[in-house]
Every structure is written in structure tokens, then in C-alpha cells.
Amino acid sequence: MMKNIQQVKAFAKLNLTLDVLGKRDDGFHELITIMQAIDLYDEISIEFTSKKAVSVAADFELPEGSVAFNAANEYMQRTGSGGANINIKGRIPPMAGLGGSSADGAAVLRAMQRHYGLMDRPSLYALAAQLGSDVPFLLEGGAAICRGRGERLEPISAGILAGLCYLVVKPGPGISTAQLFAGLRPPYAGAKSDEARLALQADDKRLFLSCISNALEPPAAELLPSIGHILKRLRRCGALAAGMSGSGSACFAVFDDKNKALAAAEGFVDAGIDFCGVFNPISGFDIYNKQDLCYNNGSGWDEGRIR
Ligand code: C5P
Image 1: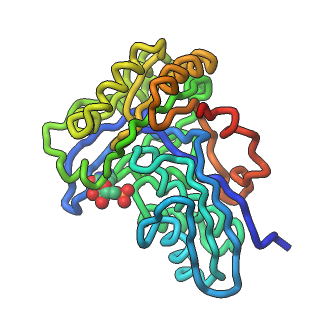
Image 2: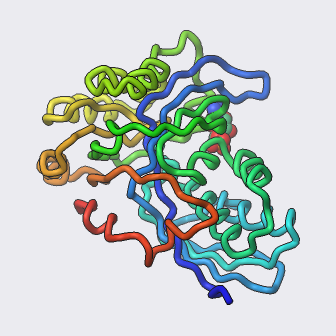
Image 3: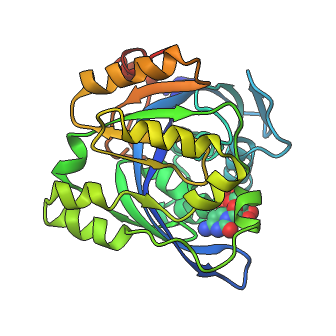
């Protein structure tokens, strides 16, 4: 019989590219973005209960109706499964564009499905998309080119991506995704998601790195000038490329040598930056297996964490 408590990891994402194509009638923006899961994660403990109720506690302030709560509650309502008591230890900085709350929701869905096994794959994905634009990707992990609101995935398997690591830096203040999108007006800054996808297919690393770009970067940097300062510094620290993730305020620099990334990180740590770490790409999860259970995954966090 399966244990009643699971420890799972909720992995963050980076947007290596992000194009905004336009605003849709439903208020969302049509995007093309290449997302990469990284080994920065929240730790989640879930106790499965026969009582049909969901509770969520966290060591940070959770919004009313968090994605994690909605994920477990909707799973329970739609399948008639038992409930869950969820406890979240937050590591992923909030309002950073790293997918923190969506990652929690995706990890809870994986755990519910692993324990109760009552949804088929299409229903699980439909629920994920309803919970948030990034939840389907974070359910899957790995790397993917994502379209629509970000919920339509085309997995990418590219040798180039496996050989990279990321220095992630976030200033103190964060950015609200909803607020940034609400203030967005055309023309949108050019980004290069499709070109990046072709470069990955052609195994052209130099071209791929030149495509790292984010249409949300200019409006985010206008809102929060420290983003511009961080990006300038990341571009001068020996990295192959640098960019902003999602709607910010976290930025990243790309390296193919972890020691160089760690050395560059020291400069940011010394300068007293709010959050800084070096992280590896994470391959896709099999939602019916146990790849993201804590005891089955090495010491990525401790190894990758700087401060
Ligand atoms: O889907 P999610 O809940 O993460 O989106 C948060 C907010 O960001 C939405 O309410 C919407 O205003 C905005 N958004 C958008 N276009 C997207 C994704 C999000 O306008 N593709």
C-alpha cells in the first residue's frame, strides 16, 4: 500500500525567450515562449486523507485560493478522491517570473495523481491549464516551446540545453504579472522564440544564445530600473547570454561552465543582492512515476545554492 505522506519538489522555470503576439478577446496575451525547468524548488509535503477536505500551510504568506489549494481541491471535486493536507517550504522567490505558485500547483497535481490515479492525462492537462498559464509546463518539466497563453506545449529535446547552467539573480522588489500585462501596449518589443527553436533543432548554439530575448523586458525595466542594472551586470560577467524570466523581476545569465557561473555569482552575493543562485536544467517528469519525490532526487538545491 502507498504511503499516506509524500515529499515532493516543485521546480521553477526560466523563460529563455518570450514573444508577445497580441492581446486576445479573453484579456490574456498570445505568447510564444521557450521555458526550461531548473533545479530551484519549493519543498512540499502532502498528507493524503480520507476526509474530503484540503488545507494548505506555508512558511510564507499564501494568497486566498492559492494555486496549490485550487489544484488539490479541484482534483478532489472532479474525481471524488480523498483530500490532502499540504505544507509548503518556499525557496522560489515570489513575484520573480520563476513560476513559484504555479510550480506548487503543478507539484500538488502530480502528487494527487500519483496517489489517487483517478484522472486521465487529457483531464489532468485541462485542469492544469485552468489553474494557470504556466501550470501545464510545470506539470511536465524539461524544456518546451509554449504557445497560446503559454499552456500549449511542444516539448524540446536539445543537446545544447542539457549542457547549460543558469545564474539567477533577483532584486528585492518583485513584479506582479497581472499588473505588467495590464499595462502592456503594442507595439511589443521583438523577441526570437521561433528562431531560437530552429537554432536548437539545428544544434546551432551560437545562434540559439543570440536569440535569448523577452518582449516583457523593456516594460518591466521601466517599472523597476534595477532590472536594467542587473542585466547590464549579468552581460558583463563572462556569461554566454543574459535575459529576464517571464514578467520579472528575476534575471538570468547563461553559462556552459558551472565554475564560471559560481564565480560570477560571488560578485552579486558580495553586493548584497536579494536572491542569487546557480541552477541546472531539470529533465521532464513522468507524472505517473516518482521522479520529483525528494528521496529520489540528488542534492540539486544544496549544490546549486549560493547563499
Ligand atoms: O495564467 P496566470 O494566472 O498565470 O496569469 C496571471 C495574469 O497574467 C492573468 O490574469 C493575465 O492578466 C496575465 N496574463 C496574460 N497573458 C498570458 C498570461 C498571463 O495577460 N499569456
